[in-house]
Length: 143
Length: 154
Image (tube, rainbow over all chains, first blue to last red; front, side, top):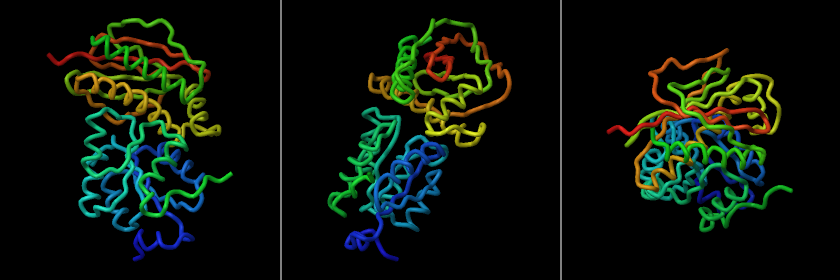
């Protein structure tokens, strides 16, 4: 299977992302923001276990991960994904943004943290940051 | 009753509503009741655990819920769909999550459960009768009432 790094060498191939949130609305909102960027394909997972399975299957360029989820919550999911793939680029997105929780997320392997509610600018800045050494950042937003 | 936490929940909710729903948000008179007064069509319940325990119940009528969801989704919704329920839950989760973050940064430990949305006519909470602070918040889409119960464990 073509890896994210392989795809990074071909600027015509779409960038891929995995949206992980138990909230259907949060997934809808993030997908709407992602769809405003050119050449990014989004997949979704509704819980931690599904996220791990989908990550293994898709090897996305980056992951958008919620924290508060029933069952396997976000920080532990990130830890498991990053243990299996230390190059994983995970952006945490949560309304829980206190210092201890943010530190816990980074210790688990997250590369960036966005407090909810998320705006297009927040998301673009985060994606550019985590991808700057990978594919040179995000394509410009559609006009 | 942890009135300091209650204030943070009300303030965070008001701030979030102003950010997400627009500037026409205000808190009407806040009152203390012997138990929650939630009795409208749509309830969103978030449980709180940690150094303190309690819950926050947001209650609103169906019309308000549909209007709020329409604002969040960017289009009117045909009914109480799963996406509408989810948008109402997410609004409550963001509001309480922001307050929980401030509370934890101030040194207390508090966690929240994922929100549960219950719909039906004239819903009433028959939970244990804990003292509850009721804060009606007016928005451009209708009134959302917060029922907050939170007490220290010791």
